[in-house]
Length: 383
Length: 81
Image (cartoon, rainbow over all chains, first blue to last red; front, side, top):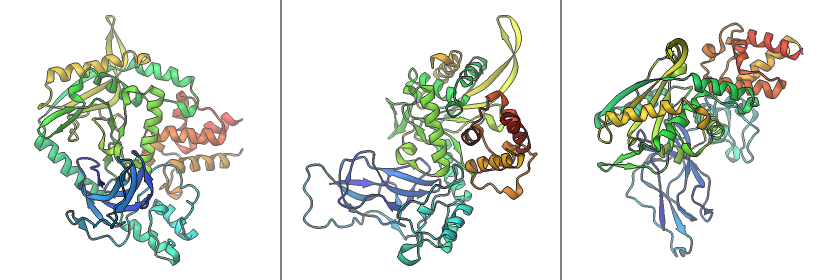
């Protein structure tokens, strides 16, 4: 019998509140299935299972706050016989008192709420109020007849939302740990971005509106491709040693409307075409802001990329997100005098930066990695 | 299509990317990116929403014409004529 445990959803997470189970005992589950929704300071996250078998016993109930690593359910593997007696609930992990209501996920940005989900009983007034407050109605627990969701349920749920202060606190704890444990070094490199921008502009002329690319996608792809030759920036520092990752899962820093940020991963970013990467980014940003991120997206990033160019800053000095060992930043696009073939001409450039972990790499390799990213941006058609 | 009808579609398209948008406090002449704190992904989704409803193609070089609601209404009215 395998234990399904609360996964870590990043260095800044210690526990999460179970909102609901999406499977019930007896249901078959396969690796990658979403079986539960939990609420963290960064919103609602869908939790995936990593075993295949049958969901045997639920050990946690909606509303309970569960520590990272604590068992949540038991899963019977294929071929394993069912136990003759019910499995006792483990007492070795901490379950804190449940909140009176399951915290909902906020919907800070994204499409307007869709049609009512089958099985959800809510009055029109409650739906209207949820819409006004940016609350996802399906995440609200109902206290009315037959569990119907009332206006007061929605308003109580809105008050239970994790506020910006809670998110600032968890980010602060994670970043303090990062600065305390990781010996950061920083490098910056100004890149001629004109070839990439011209290429994107020409590409977008021929693309239907929904398939247009943002320049950030080219930056992501260049970083992902360069990492293939610089594995010491792609992986995790755990148990006192660096463990490089065979896969390149780019964490993308996304600002949330209610404040704070989140950095979910685009899996195998180096293997995606630019169009696929754009589609993945659009999907990820939408779900980061609407709710619906998956646990693997929050725990799998092997390096993070942050692009603060739209906020008007020339360069970024980012903080590494442990257990990762590097983070790449990009500033705004600047028009600068640039020397091309002996002549000074106006050119759009961008400042890339790297913060990396001295326990794993040194500045010489960091500089080569950053210049490799810049080199790839000179031939965007090959990305 | 009248300017009022176009303005309504512009605001609906904005609301689809910024659900918390308060129409009462929306200025027709202020810059949308500053006013609503939207980024390039939000703006692309806004353009896609306009495209879906109005069936107009808005090239990237014309994005500056969508800087405010008033600008957008004028630009889209010309495109729809």
